[in-house]
Image (cartoon, rainbow, N blue to C red; front, side, top):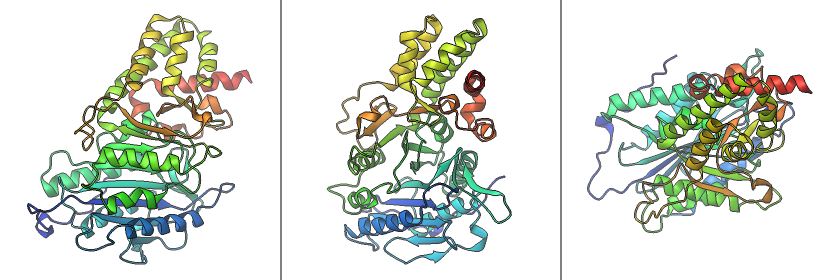
Length: 422
């Protein structure tokens, strides 16, 4: 379904002047919904809204010359509320804009927020943050009174961004409008699948390979530098690095965390290398079915965290190069691993744009338990057999990556093989 919500017309925008500086708009879409047996997010949402308020107040405060505007929309605790942080105490979301599951709520939130600040395309910067529990490739999953599942899945997220891009292109005449950052204050989303899904609609992705503790991001620390810039306003790549560092330092080693900043402009290169690896692994299995046993074990050595159906990509590549005697597999794994583990170049004077940076621009972690992580993961359901991989397979197939490569075929073959062994 195509989502169509008109942008404010260009004539209603305040035209940029020579002395106008850039501004940041940060939009946090919060799904408080949770499934039975998981921790409630109600108090966490309230705490994060308070942190956002502190982050805005840390600078010069709201006003016509503010460098930062922060919007939040909360679903799952009573009637959905929308906030312009520092300007109001929350307003009910209109009834026709409350449906999370079809993307309408998110689309309205983005368009209304950008309209409220008279966003200037090509000049101002934008970050969208998706917040909440992530289950089975969805965010904000909960049962409605009718018994149906209400959630935003990653296929719907892409449809929202496609419509947003099309309408912005028509409204502003910009050939390739993109968000600066799409970020996730949720668990287990720094994946090849999601990076490829979003690469045409945002420049950078911020997300974790593993679980995010319920306190989530330290929003006051994240926002204060935008509200009160030291010299000039940060560029998108700089803000992403700032978020990674502030998040990881907010937790002690007793709470293992990680966070990644990924350059989505380079996601097609990642896709091409991963596609080749999936192909040669499937070919090797066809030649020698016993190779399945070896792969089941090799994948399991690279799991990102206990009971999570993901493997660290670079670590998997290392294990394949070391322990597999297939030349084509070795070469494909080496090519992919080398792409991910590249030295950071000299970025003096390039930090605003991130030009020349590697795909994994910034990767932070805080504990020895995360030592095998390198910034990005791939789905591999057999490494966490407690998961019902067949039940969520349809949702996984919503990823363009799953449809455009042999990866889904490979990992579900491994899962079925491992399930039959135990």
